[in-house]
Length: 248
Length: 171
Image (spheres, rainbow over the protein chains, first blue to last red):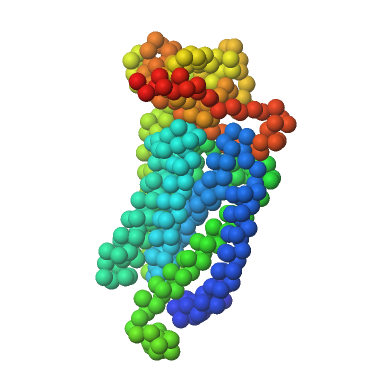
């Protein structure tokens, strides 16, 4: 069933395959970002209570959702690497961690910037904000472990165990606003029922979400290729690549 | 699957299941401490699950809906008093709701209005009266474009302050 995937377990095949995808990813990302940001920040209607401050929503919510999605992707990669000792999965987890950390930091920062005028405070230790901060620390821990060992396989194992343990935090972030009373509001768009906003506000959000998701994919792909090269620098195919490109 | 992989799979999965169970128990045990605020009804009857009642002089957070018509602002200073009832969706106010009165001397957040959810941090004084040192607005998850809100008759006006009131705050 998984036979078609097997060639991509080879670092060289993966490296070249992603290399072919990159220009397309770049084009899609740029188009979506341009449409999404202009639509959201200029043309979408302002909220009746919050006025234009509401537009922070279009960056805060996509980054907050993606901070959790990237973590789940990283933990799945770590799981594959731990169980099947699949080297490339380690490389991809190492590529994802810093991107996830930056996205989480953006979500926390935009949230604080919105919270000050709307709630009246930058920060409050409620369940949602605290668990999202814990997510940032988990990312930082995973990055630190990836760089703490000379031996990349050992580092991948240690970081992988931490990322798997941290998965417990994801449902806590997601459901914190339902399980406990918090200052943070409940979900507007990421729920089963219809979004709690009008369609003229919702569509720009969809574009913004896709744009930021594509941007994240794009950056992770670049990092993944670099990670493959760094981890296979002694292999003949990398040497050939270096001589062909003429870089010393 | 070969036996070594199978073994690793079982180890990893059993660690994950064990951890989730532990985390579940910890959160269950801590659940009252994780709640950010008391609801007005909980000040009278005690916390929903433990029945622990706050005592006079205790610092606490209270969260509730501002009762329409209860906001009284002093025209020459920042003093404001208002009443809170339990938050519920959809928003309805009944006379039988337990009411907590809040006094606050400071600038209210932009989202503050009657019918809005707020969280106040302060001291319980008289069983049902709270002297607040901080008032935060709680936003619900609904966003409505301005024109649509006007059609629906939903209006929001930021709390506004006169020069005299703002000067008073500097002392």
